Length: 78
Picture (cartoon, rainbow, N blue to C red):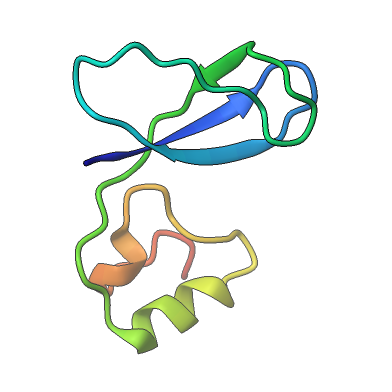
């Protein structure tokens, strides 16, 4: 079952849910119980080395949304 990430339009809380495909989504915010949720785009995670993750986490600009940091090509480094 895939994991999908949602953000509450009312309070801004983000959460993850396991979802079966082709099943109606009837999720509610875990913080405020609103059903006005927006599905977020998530990257596919493939195993990353611990060193790459630590280096990316220490980057002042934060991790790269493209995953370039984990491939040794941090777009934030000069």
